[in-house]
Structures are given as C-alpha cells and as structure tokens.
Amino acid sequence: MKRVEGKVALVTGAAGGLGSAAARMLAREGAKVVVTDRGNREKEGQEVAASLGEGMGLFLPLDVTKEDHWAQAMERTLAHFGRLDVLVNNAGMGIPKDIESLSLEEWRLVHAVNLDGVFLGCKHGIRAMRQCGAKGSIINVSSVAGLKGVPTLVAYGSAKGAVRMFTKSVALHCAQKGYGIRCNSIHPVFIETDMVAALANASGDPDKARAKMARSIPLGRIGEPDDFAHAVIYLASDESKLMTGSEFVLDGGTTAQ
Image (cartoon, rainbow, N blue to C red; front, side, top):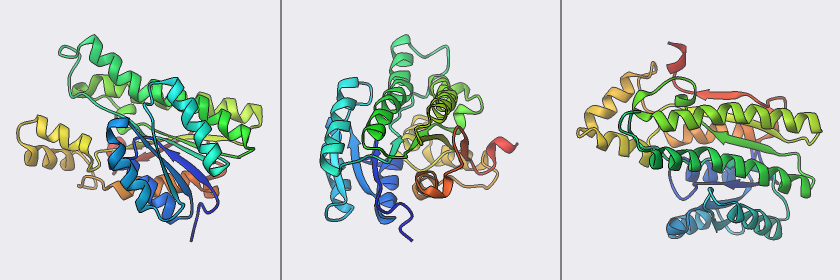
C-alpha cells in the first residue's frame, strides 16, 4: 500500500534488532530511511541501509548521547534527502540489575542512552522538521517497563518511564506551537532482540528464562521484531494523524493484568 510513500525517516539503533526491522518496513512502505547507530556498528548499519533498495537508505554513525552527533546527522539528512518527516528514537540499552547491585555509573549510562538520547533526538528532530516545513511524526520507544515496575531492571524502567512523560510534554509543546509535529511513545513487551537474549543468557538458563518471559505475557509468546515495526508504520503514517501524546502499548495484554 506504500503507507509512508514520499516520507523520509531517521531511525536510531537501526543496525539490528527493533531498529533494523522498523527501517526495513518503513522502506517497504515507501519511505527513504536514514539508518543510524554507533560507529562501531557501521558495517551492520551499512548492510541494513544497502538492503533497503537503490537510493532508499543512508547510513550515518550516531552516538545518541552526543549533541554534536545529532546536529551533524540532521544536517546530513536534510542535505541528502531534503527533508525529515519521521524520527524513531529507538536506540536503547538495559543492565539487568536491581537497586542494591546497580552502580551510579551504570545508572547514568542507562539514562544517558535511553533518556538523554530521546531528549536530544526530539530537540534536533523538531528543528529539522520545521526547517523543511514537514508535518512530522516523532516516535519514542519506551517499554512496558515504563508502565509497570521491574525490580531487576531498575535503571531501564526509570528511564523508559521518563520517556513516556517526556513524550507527552513534547507532543503538547508541538501542538500548542502549531508545528504539525506529533509525538507518541511505543511500549513493547519482550521482543526477540539482542537485549532479550542478553537478559535470558544472564539468567544462566536461557531456555528457561525465555519460557518464563512467554508465560508472563497473556498471549503466551515473546514478540517478533515485525510486531514492533507494524506499530512504527502506523504512527509514522497519516493514518495516525489524530494521535499525539499517546502510548501505543504493544504488550500482549501484560498491563491489563
């Protein structure tokens, strides 16, 4: 259907996992996509960008915690594609520790990536969208952990909960200014990614850990990356033009319990 045809999207953390799934589906639905990730994942990022089709993808190295990286990424996006319509703030990380075992340095690192990165993305994304006159969509990736407590992911849950509230403030700001820029958050439950694999491996019994994750979800299964990507397409498209400041909860019924 080409639901986002003619749009340009930038996706962070797109060298693998949820980000690469979103980038590929955005391209399949007609968008040109700027694939970004850390410099040490350039090879994987280049491969994702190349897989999108001739002229459809561009890889840019981007450390989401550094403001100068964001400024450069936006400048290069506008220079290469001429506009920015969609920003997916997907880059994230988690450290599976509780309040007693987590260090201050680890707390700050998780918040720098998961929260500071979203702040900087929104700040520079709004500026770029306004500069090219786009009516844009900003999609901030939170988590089900941003809606309910997870004692073994204390920093991750804190940062993702903050992303939820930050999203609402950005949405209201853009609406009050009349920018035509929407901002929503997505809250996925466990989805098969490197992060979920790391959590499972940290348990010492990955198969048992995955089975426990699946049992915690009323629908009885861990999500797939394309489950997330479909949500991104809806929020990126004009189909969601009345939706801003909202949570797109993708949790298999977890928060309904």
